[in-house]
Every structure is written in C-alpha cells, then in structure tokens.
Length: 412
Ligand SMILES: *Cc1c(COP(=O)(O)O)cnc(C)c1O
Image 1 (cartoon, rainbow, N blue to C red):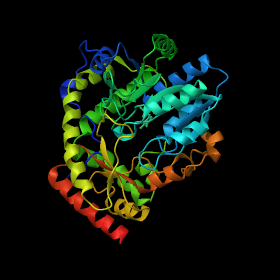
Image 2 (cartoon, protein in one colour; image 1 turned 90 degrees about the vertical axis):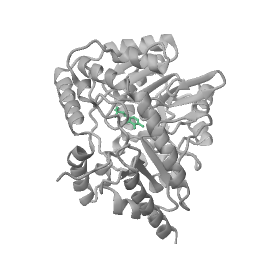
Image 3 (cartoon, rainbow, N blue to C red; image 1 turned 60 degrees about the horizontal axis):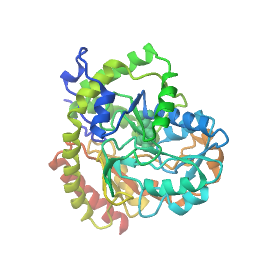
Image 4 (cartoon, protein in one colour; image 1 turned 135 degrees about the horizontal axis):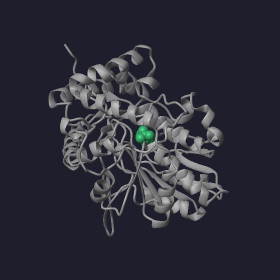
C-alpha cells in the first residue's frame, strides 16, 4: 500500500488535459494579463531570472559590485550573485517580521551597492517601500525576490498591485512546490520600459538546449503523474526519509544546491502546460488563502506559537505554507525531529542562515563578517506547515495537537 504524504507546500496540481502536446495557449501574455502588467519575460528558472537581472544592472552600473540579500533566504540567490562575479552582503532580519531590518539595511547600503533584494519569503509580503527608500539614497536598484509569491498583492494608495512590481525588477519562480509550475521556470517583470527592453536583450542571448528542455519535460511529466497524495510518498517521502535517517536536514529541506545554474529558454510545450494550469491558479490561491486563514486562527490560539505575518500593511499574500515561530529552538527541534517526514506536512523553509551551511562558504565573500544574530534566531525557531488542500481537517487536527504538546513541553 502506498503511504499518504502531504506535499511540503501547496503546489497547484496538474491535470492530464494540461499536458496535451498541441494548442496555442501562451504563458507570457496570460501571466501578464492576470497580473495586470504590460508584459512579462519567461526564463528557465527563478535563479536564471535573477542572473539576467543582475547582469543587466551590472552593465548599467559597472562600478557597483555588492548585492544585499536577507541573511535567511534561498541559497540559490547567493549562488547567482557569485556567478555574476558580484559580492554578497547579508542583511540581518527584523525581530518582529521575516524581512530585512531597516537600520541594518541602511548601514549596508553605499556607493558600492548594485542591488537590494527584498524577499517575499513563503508568500509573506516584504516591505519593498523600505528597501526602495534605502536604495534610492545611494543610487542602487531594488530587485524583488518574489520567487515564492506569484499572485501575492499589495494595497497602495492608488490601488492593488502584484508583488514584484514595486521595485525596479521583480522575479517569480515556477519551480516545483512554488504554486504554478513548469517543473522549473521563472518570470521577470520590470516597471520601466527601458529596463524591460534591456532584460529582453539579455534574455535573447540565452542559447537553447534540447537536452535541458527534454530533461525538464520528462520531469514535468513525472511531476504530473506523482503529484498526488499517494505518489508523493514515493517521489518525495522516500528520499526525505533517507535524508532524515542520515540526520541530513539540509538535504531533507532540499537546500543542497550545486553551483551550476542551467540557462536556456523555457520550452514551448512547458509554457502551454503552464498557461493551462494558470487558468485554475486564481481559484486555487483563493481556496488556499481561505484554508490558511482558518488554520492560522487555530494555530495562533496555542500558547507560545506565533504565526509569521507580512512585513507591510495592506498585503494579500500567497499561502504555500503557514509559517510558525516557536518559543525556543529546543521546542522547534523536538517537533521537527518527531514529525518531519511522517507525511503530516511539516518542514523547514530553509535550514540555516547562509553562512551556517558550510557548503556555501565559497560564495560568501564580503558577507563573511556580516552580523546576523536575529536571522539565526529565526532560522532556529521557524517551522513550516504545508497548506496543501490534501492535508485534510483530520490530519491538520492531529498536527495541531502535536504542536500544542511540543510547545508545552518546550517552554516548560
Ligand atoms: C526558489 C527560490 C529562488 C530560486 O528560484 P528557482 O526557480 O528555484 O531557481 C529564489 N529565491 C527564493 C526566495 C526562492 O525560494
């Protein structure tokens, strides 16, 4: 019998009809229309989108070579910065929100700063206005890392806008587990027409690779076949259990990236698959937001459990997971040891702040001395609960009970 496993995040499931080889659906115009933007640019991954953004900005400001990112983020961001020959700076987090601290950010910004990357981690909306204010003073750019937040919106005085659109450049990921997926894929947006044209020119330099496209197409088919509660036990649960049995949390969280960043266009067939699935995304985001609202209210009633919210007001996030901060690292670790990998949908967004992995030391450069006590504290106390609709009420009730026990035990 196949075991049930909740996916770690609420990814939009594909349907058989999404996979048909013929058709005229186009992903870029459909995405642009849904987001309410003039146009978007497709890439083969979020990381590839970030590479194009960084290269484009570097060409405009060749004397600037530092990129400031939150100390707790996806390691791929650091790899992309290094790949462009740029120097990384890590910004410590606020203690009250999963976002860069304004004072620290101001102290890191200078004439050497090329770009600042406010990051909408796990669909929680970052304070982009703050990043823009800090960047503006020193003449730097803002790239919004909206990899995990396609479909999140912010309310502004003149109306709602998608996240990714308040900075100079924004990017979304279409990787597995981030909502809409083409197995790997990325989307670039920019408000300024000149910048959009420069990004498009950089994109045209990217050479096609039949081999990568074939590989990704097969992976997408495998995803379509196995992304269901029973298939996941096999495709995701087994490697996860093996990694956890070794005590390898970094592999278990999928934080073990290679330096190599593939770059090729996003193939036509995968674009069509994405365009068809996109038609169901708005309803899916609404469904998962509603589910999260109910579950957040119940989780928040557990003493010691803190629901991680947005860093700015008037935000409408996406809900791939519900993020909790537990009272102590001991309580968090006890919960994780007991329930990670048992199919209940519990996981870690990222295991460490970047310098604590060890395996990314070669890309730290200038960031080696950056202070990150608060980010480290976040990394030690965070836990993510899958917001997949497959994690039904009965399973969620059980998990809620386990969390209540862990926090009770941890704080006693
Ligand atoms: C996943 C992710 C990326 C990279 O996107 P890919 O499509 O996986 O290359 C960048 N930043 C954050 C915060 C992410 O979660």
